[in-house]
Length: 370
Ligand code: NAD
Ligand code: IPM
Ligand code: MN
Image (cartoon, rainbow, N blue to C red; front, side, top):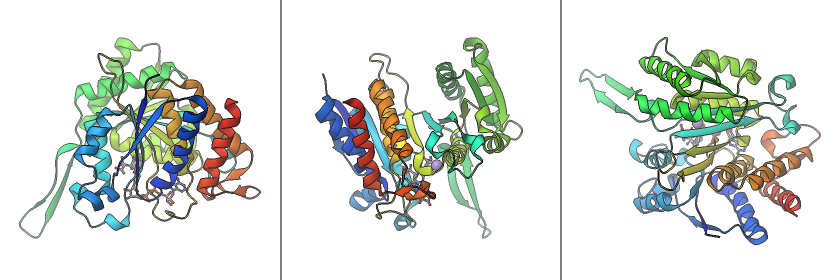
């Protein structure tokens, strides 16, 4: 079997702590299942800025281009609050997304049965929840030009961000949404703000056309994004796939994360288009949470979002569907055994550290494969 090339980018804050737990799983799969993962590691974010003066170097970009998949921890932190905007830690992540053309960001929000009672929402609202937020990731206000602060000369400044979408960008993310819905409960909810934004008008038109032309078998509904945020906390189980733009997707997926109990639970996959010749997609897998500076270095962060992101990597980059299912089952079983990291801890459960949670999930996975 040919090698499976993984580039690991642990990053800053709790990124390295979470990545260490995934590494345990990779090692186990190599030893016990002859999985053939070959890993390289590189710096991204604040630590890359400290070492090279940029948040992601050209050499490492070339490594990312040639890897089969990239695993990303988290970037950022107060240490880099004052660095120039262009070289902020977050710019390293944005460069990866843009240059690898990872336009489709899959953010599933699943409520594990064992956590149904520990959400801030009522149990019946989130019990059995399984929705997918599909966030457009390489366009919109994140990347639109001009993006600048200009001096107006009268003591005033003007800040400009540009929300910009071309037809093809909406077409390709809509197609992914419908394709994914067909493998799930066959429903897509498209969210924009066509009542105040031209990009929302075009978004709505293009999604409607793609649906009519190629996916009429899927149920499509449209919702204004602000109302969508409200509906997400009112009755999230009405949704299957939510497709939305870069900025709305960023915010709505943080909301969805809390439905599942903690930001520390939510994984994501960022995928490019399949290569015309090989059919392979560029891909990066990362938890939805950030570097959590408030808890970094304390061995209390929840590694589940990072481990579940690796499960998505097994599924989408390596067609290791059985292994992906078993990693997810190992997570569910460990939670059902009553262990919790601090962010999801409630009365009657046993608190464990980041490393202990990782060890328990790896041990459970080993049991499941033997
Ligand atoms: P954050 O996600 O880092 O933290 C928000 C809150 O959630 C904190 O209280 C944190 O302790 C908690 N939390 C997050 N992940 C957790 C985990 N795995 N286990 C337990 N608790 C967890 O968001 P923030 O505080 O707004 O941002 C901090 C830094 O991270 C900023 O520099 C931001 O730009 C960056 N950030 C990076 C990414 C990324 O790298 N993908 C994503 C979001 C934010
Ligand atoms: C996320 C993060 C990033 C974003 C930041 C760190 C650039 O919040 O992945 O959700 O805004 O996309
Ligand atoms: Mn975010």
